[in-house]
Amino acid sequence: MKKTYHIGVIPGDGTGPEVSAEALKVLTAAAEKAGFEYELIHYPFGGERYLKCGETLPDSAVSEMERLNAILLGAIGHPDVKPGILEKEILLKLRFSLDLYINLRPVKLYPGVETPLKNKEPRHIDFDVVRENTEGLYAGAGGVLRKGTLHEVAIQESINTRKGVERCLKYAFERCRKRNGKKQLTLCGKTNVLTYAFDLWERVFHEVGSGYPDIATDYAHVDAVCMWMIKNPERFDVIVTDNMFGDIISDLGAMIQGGMGVAAGGNINPEGTAMFEPIGGSAPKYTGKNMINPLAAVIAVQMMLSHIGEEKGAFLIETSVLKVIHHHMKSMEAGKMGIGTREIGDRVASFIREDV
Image (cartoon, rainbow, N blue to C red):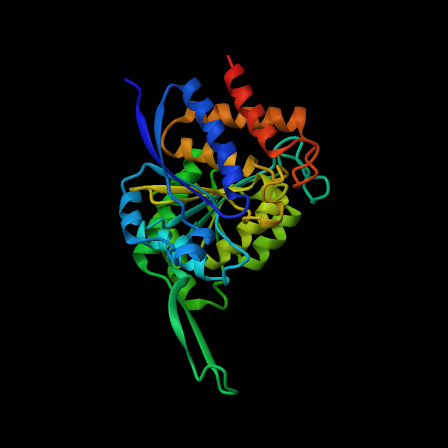
């Protein structure tokens, strides 16, 4: 009997529904070929729903999502909704409510994709960023005094718990072992200035690392990591860091791997559900024009299948993406691809079905 997975879909705003449609098209082909089944549960949350009825993400929906195997997110962001509302009340609420404490960002340059880095090839750019996803500066601790006056005080505190740091580091070590690359884990921090938070990170890093004698470890300040990602990206295998630094360096990683069109990520609870998404925003100016690159959403599905253990389906998607890039695409940029959004999805699905 085929295994059935329960997958939630939040198409979201702007071009989110368009890239989600192509990702689901590819998921269907992968399921047929790899021999698994799935049921989709669609959730209409995003800017349009908020503008229409004032609802962002009800608790009842979060309770449903806790029971899912995975969630596919298109994109959240609406030009008519004040920045911060949808991000906090949908994206951050999902992270905290579902305890999606790992943000996983593969930084991988595919053959045929241009990188802005001179003389760098796919063999030079292939590493993971593991970002702690529920603590740090995004925990929401702090406040404002005397707002709007000359004496205003704004405080934003970084919260780092032993439990939160340790479970993130354990995931990073396991990820490093699973990749079977250089087997090198780099802790990215700022121990010379953020002495309280990164003293904790560094101590636990070495404690946890003692249980992984097969993994080499090193440390680098975040500014050095940014420099080396540009100059020598090949030095990295897996980078682990806190919430804020991870947010920054993962976007830098997206640029060196060819842009948001091929950048996908996962928000993961290893003991629960996980949410996968293209890294780029909702890109409202491209809505309905069949011009947006859906490959990041397709790669998000590949990550999702790998996460739930459907490695054959994940492999089929990745190899088919490589074929589409090689045979059909001129660029990864929206409007310059030489082929439309729907046609890219069609061709990835077609290559999957043709695979023998």
